[in-house]
Length: 461
Image 1 (cartoon, rainbow, N blue to C red):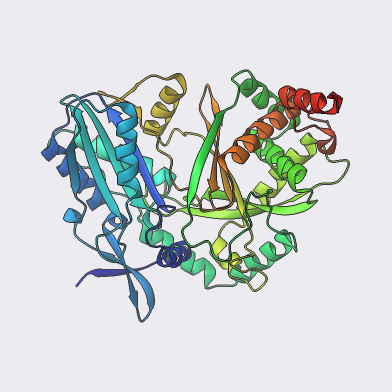
Image 2 (image 1 turned 180 degrees about the horizontal axis):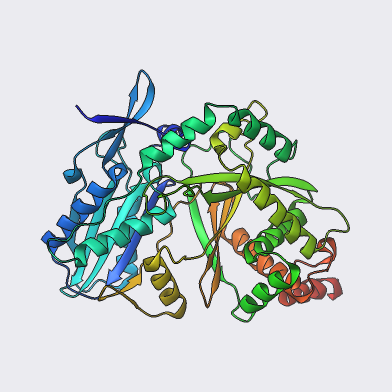
């Protein structure tokens, strides 16, 4: 008989979404590395088994029981490594293979929540990819997983991965303790007042919203922020007394306000919940979406928007133990009227994730990194598309900043989203030029668009 464990509130919500659209890849998470070295298949399988043994969420299936959905834990050999020879495959073909591997549906009740793939282009040129369902992982966990896998592979033969002080079950137990006591009502009251009656922020859509978004279909557009702008953004944030994240968020909220005309609205902010002792190295779904209000008036400046964003982020983080799923389940919200339709987050590699830090910096410069003697580079594959109307991820390294817009393709066309990207970067440049400029008085048009508009206005009849 398999070991049965309770789910977190966030996992229960993901289970509900999975059952709505079991074939959708919107909640598939993957990480892939191109490694210019020979990898031994058997040794890699042993390393994978060691990692899966260390993190029992990776060998889970989900089952409906009389007590609700539960996580069933299987043996370490339940996660297999597929090996495929793809001689002389080009870079685009490798990305295609990895994307198809990552987007294949998971059978959460049968075949499990994790799988691994080795593509061998040449004896010393391979791609290592790991895909998991979001119900057992998050972005940080995915890199911890790959890091553990390479650590186990390169370790001496008899060496073992060090035991974890805590596991995902400890996280679930802590959540249950918080939500079964008086703190739950305190948190609920905070979020009710914090969000108020503000609607979810929206951007103009190319098509009407369907009654039910059954498939969560999505796509991705991205734009590297001009390099000359990156140090100026950091300097402006410092001079304004806010973090770089708060400045980026405040300008993004300004962008939504300018496009929608709404004076007040909500934006989701996915953030880590791996804050307890011993949770830093745990693989699991350790994310909560904080719902942040934004308020604009005729006198709001970029500096004011950034300062408000920072205040709201700090207040929300102090009350981040209240799961987004509980907020979304309250009577004032419905599936067609959720707290957040647009999400915004920033990914900045930390010292706790050396592998991610290495490959992110190498990707920004177009080079390779080296980890434990293995030359490697990031295989960047679009993923997790269509969860929100638009989900923005700002990817930051020491030398670069990239805006990634994931969008729902049943609502938006690619051309529209690329225009959103351009206009957001235009507002970032305007905020850097004059943080005290009025949001309402700043043009969204770049020089080329303004020139085209003026040409239309002066054309002969």
